[in-house]
Length: 167
Picture: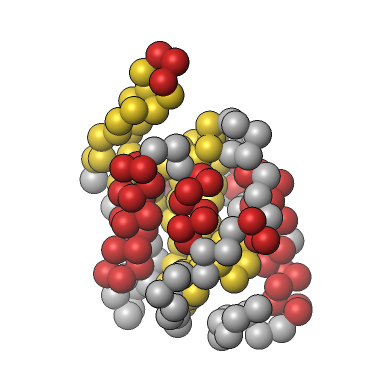
């Protein structure tokens, strides 16, 4: 495992692994952007283990079904991380569509934080979004945060062919 200061003990990994929503840690200090950790909820929801996802490119290749869509989602995520201010390291919430291992298309909210040189990505199912907290509190937060949405267009048997990005 690489040197990420926020993961300094097996106790911390155990806590992160027990979180009920998918979580992924990416090392931003290296050019390849290696994935240093995914929790059990990540594996359960998406069907991919950390051994299958060595880098951010591996993640994007497996999770997003179109080259242009992959480039925009990952590019936006990295720009959000780069533009996070030193005082406010939280990223905007983005709605994405993921292609899970079982060939399921899943809609999730992707957000996270930058901590030192680590990108902490949090995925919350848009279907069960309000199961993770108090409905009113989350609605209030959502209304006050910059939300970017990748709106997908599906064409008959061809799957996703294009998308619109709305910020």
